[in-house]
Length: 155
Image (cartoon, rainbow, N blue to C red):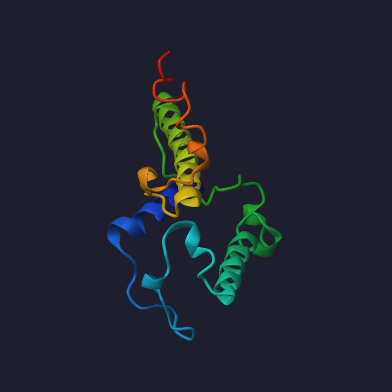
């Protein structure tokens, strides 16, 4: 849920706020502004950049407090994701349950939003693509036949 919340914001933020100035890869001459938003960015990032991303993710996973790499017994009995601080707290159990349920609901909404943006980006080339301009969509396969016009033709 939290990952999808970040993914949704990561999809939207460059469109709204712009991109970082400067170079993503000075040796290749690749600027941040040269990287498109969405799925098209995957093919534009150099392979060494992907290696850095994977290495950093591995470092974060293997150096966490509940792994052997932490090499301490202080963290032996903590739950995954428990890093010693609470963001959603309340002394009232009902209010805490309400906050946690809201976080789960928002996480599920972000999952659907991320998948929707991926789907539209895959079909139109942009998460904000105009469906009227995209005539090759498989979703338009039987658009001109009787009975499929909104709402279901003459039914």
